[in-house]
Length: 510
Ligand code: FES
Image (cartoon, rainbow, N blue to C red; front, side):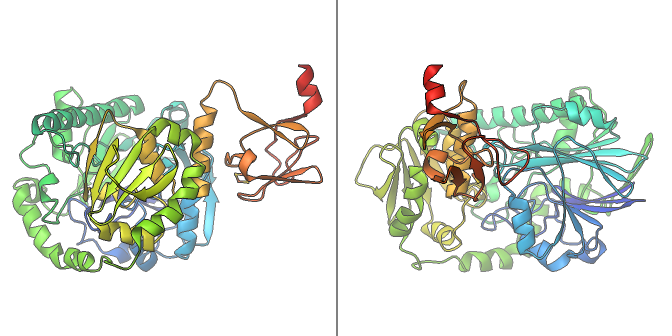
């Protein structure tokens, strides 16, 4: 097996049974704040543009690079789809022109003309953009596990796939915390230190559990080349920086007694065979890591026109922000029962003009009049205008990962809040709410046309008390149109689902 490292989480895997292009990322992402590190600009797209298979682990922009996929990847590639309840990857790739898809089931190996592959998927609202995934590949001779930034909670299925020769795993930060928070410097430094240690320790735990012969750190860190963000890069092995690079992590592995780590940079080619891994670099890695500041300053100068052009294109004065957010967010807030209860407060989007409150008590959006707010975000209004103009339903996958904002909060981190910002549509918030309700010890029911019925749709967990319509004994979930026969619970749309329903008089006797 031959593996070319493309930078970040990008791999081009060539086997005797075909090639797989994984997560190619080349263009700046998140309002041009993230750039692949080290630079992969020298790689020739034509050399990787006609794979037999394409695998995109999830829709984060540093994994699903729309421009690159549209312009450089053959639409004849068969897409290996992760097993995500919301088919976000498929929808995006269809839009880009891909037509051949093969659906996987998490932890179930799939034969593809001699190749054996398996996805390991995570699907909770906190997992990436409502779903992340890893890919195991077996060409009959060696096996690799491309975990990228997925964090599976159960590796039994992974172990059952067989022993891995190489494991590619994230080790660095992909987050805005704690840098953007207005914490006192000492506190920020202590939090950064803890985060840096935690993420490297987690990565090492995964390496030990996967137990591959070799570990290759990947999927981060990005580099920040905009002057506003340049200080986020890790220089001089700063213990409080959450973006340590590959060399730092490999040194950490060695300090923990693990000698299996190997460095790959964009353009590195690994020849993997049983018991052997040979890596050839395109140039001396010391040219990157020896004087990283000089390397990034030079890279930043090369990218400056591109970043400046993107900044200059941000819209100003094209949207009535308060009115647009009110119209967009209030229907979502109305559906967000568990989310609102868990956030239990107000959030201020301080854009200078306007200052917008998202009130999770009243589920309303309004102009700020000095109310107490548990969370406060300072954001350039141009970024919010862009999100409005694009109707971007996932602000984490655009604004928050950009690190182009500042934040303040009372109390501790609230995961429900950031999950809310990933779920800015009825479909998404219903999915999140359904996931939360499934965590409850007892399932919920409601009364419907003389029946006691499970409240969450067996398809993607929409609240049937809100989205269900009954006609002639058939309950239709209006979110995607699935239908259920109330008398029997039979699903008329799919063979593998059922709805719990029982006549009210039976329920009353119990
Ligand atoms: S959630 Fe899709 S049809 Fe109900």
